[in-house]
Image 1 (cartoon, helix red, strand yellow):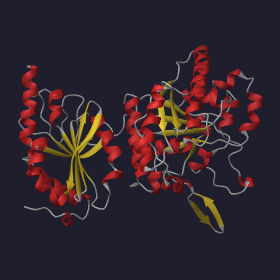
Image 2 (tube, rainbow, N blue to C red):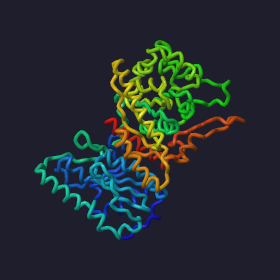
Image 3 (cartoon, rainbow, N blue to C red):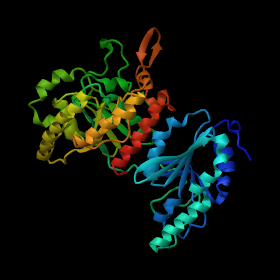
Image 4 (cartoon, rainbow, N blue to C red):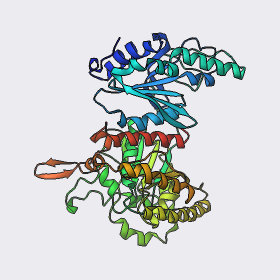
Length: 469
């Protein structure tokens, strides 16, 4: 029987007509071998294959036999979804993953934290490669491989079967959708580099939106007098300074007073995302206030203590910082538990990493004096990266390697590329009468199926992995 991609007009038909009725039977699987709409932690995927007959194999061994399958709309390009799909494979620690839009189908293998593309073909031609597919993820092949592993380990014990309402042991896959654990400890993350133009604001607003889209409760704090993040989350709706409604209640009020102005009083609902995101705005007046605060030691810790009062209200707090070594940058790093360092990996940005490291060491001494733990550097995030093919093939790998080899800093695997969609989302406006009012959006509100959105989804997953979630 030959499959024709035109039979599938939407994602549901890719799932039913291509995957369930054609691909899985071709590989020897019956309806008892797969589960749909499966949830693991905060990841949802379309199909999980677990060949029946393996219920006596230990869970850790049996994971070698798991295959996840993601279905996409026939008109969507798979390349858009690959960064997130690769992160899924690493997070789930399954050996094989299949992604398809019926027009094309790809098979990936995860081995020792590396992802390899094993097979790729057009949907209409898949039957020509049936032997190759069966030799890798066919039911009989997987069952034989896993039984050999179990026999070599000399450990065959009873394991629970998976049903649509059941969980394997205590830490495996579930088919029912569950909300995020609201009891998790609030994570305070500063996004900092002392060089400007490296994508700090873009990182803060879209990473926050990616996590909020998954159900997390988010607070964004803007500590930069340029107030780019305040603008990007939709809090600067005025077009004339006479209408400025931020000057009397912003982040400086939190820092100046120990008793007045709580987080709840100053935080505002954002408009750039439909999800639950609050923000504390910055203001240009921060520049003037710095001179009076620099000699007030207590100003460095007030934000941290005030955040402790709302530790049960948010899952993640992101602090956008000024591109400098000033007081507000110090306050951000003293306040934060974790640090992300966006960098375009260009020579000046890389050289600036030396200053960043020295600055962190200096502030960690201050944190120790205050009785706080040193900040945990999660890594340098490659951002605003050129999409030029030759640059990505030859130059980017060398620049990434230099972060680890020359600067001894951890590095995010995810790359955030410089894309028009990100700029257009930031620049959106609406007309109110004759006035054109700023109406910026997150990349997920502006174009959820874009490559940029996929990159930030992958970044959110990687961040959670680094945080041990």
